[in-house]
Length: 247
Image 1: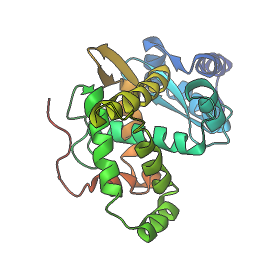
Image 2: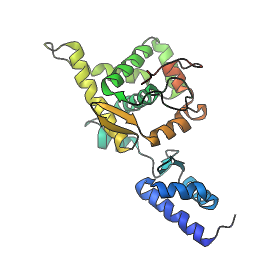
Image 3: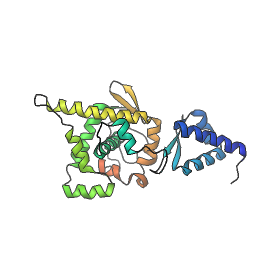
Image 4: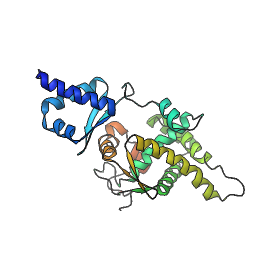
């Protein structure tokens, strides 16, 4: 399809803005939604770098779809910028696991279109992770090995890393020790997600999802094509089985 030079220029300017900042403001959303030529060109530019353009009511975002994208955040980059010195793949697995539990805690059924809670307390987040860890532990060693191949997640290492955060002195109470260590890790995950504009800290040890996060969850995490059934495995979502507490 041939596009007028003016449209190509407008679309490329918008693409360079997204490539530089990862996001563009409300006027870009209006141009993207209202102009078929600009939308088609911008989507084409994004596909060339293995990305997709997603829009909320207020912003456009450039999201990498594969590891081949130059905009993909690598595991090594996350280790260097967010995790402790000497962090291993196990720490990364746990970070991803904590993120999935966070996202799932806002929705009460598999393939929900809208979150069922407005915010989440950090101590609730820790509790939800513990619940899913306990659920993983109900599988025997051989089951977990098989499930690791199916989902490409090292569930045994995730369990080990979470349990190893029980770094308690003999004089300390068990729950306090767990809470301090695990809360420290959760704050690290929160900082990473906030920097990626996926959560917002609203104070009082509470966070909420951003519109960017909601859009990504609906588009990817709630689609079998992308999540490969991982939410069903973690939460046992079937039909309208409840999970999140209504707020």
